[in-house]
Length: 282
Image (cartoon, rainbow, N blue to C red; front, top):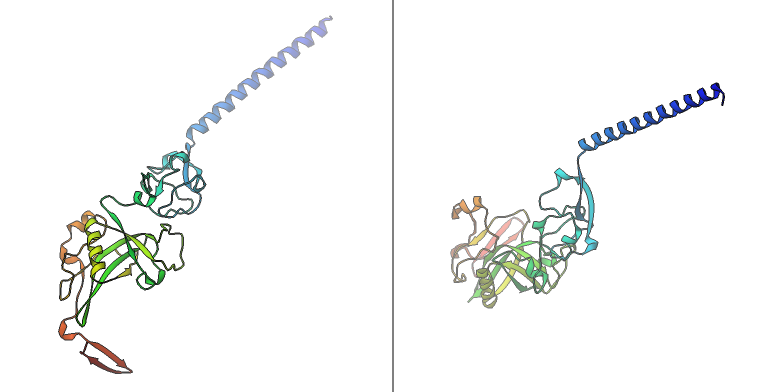
């Protein structure tokens, strides 16, 4: 081997060694930079959301669920990370598609029907037979709030009073799903009431007719009937959930009341054009 060839081999070896060292250093620098970027990037976590609208009282199945990625620090308290933790539970409220599922919106059903699992503590489910009139033309659906009006006739006079106020509708017929918007004429409506309310409702059904009055869902006022001639002889039972601290502190006199017209003004007004006549023969 000539000296010139030996020198060329040495130079090539040195070049390869320098190139290898440069590649190693560059790779280490890139990895360090990537690690630094990952350290500053928010951590992601998978959270369970609704894949479709879930009606009130529905038993959750795998088809109802999907997972999305979100920033870990923005994960709502009580949310689920594993769909298996939700399957089999019963929804206590209507849930919209893509809504993050929270533990407080579900209950674990025990023996019996899923409807029993969605009953609030200390509450009872009572069914009332209805027709297209009592059921407000079929516009009462699960999740609505209603007042229950009891009517009775005494001699030639008829009386009516609100015996239960702000009552939650649990089901219509055997359906607890609120995924319908069209009127549905049914034969029975199941209401969520207190134990005292259940007794009052049963007694009122024996004494006369019942009528349901549909409420605005944002209206939380309580209507209490005054005692008067022909009234049902027992205290009025309000079938709402436990009041908020502010509501509990409010005086009783703030509740709106149903006033009866004095007996001296009972009658019927007949309007013909601008002429108004009144008859007291009723």
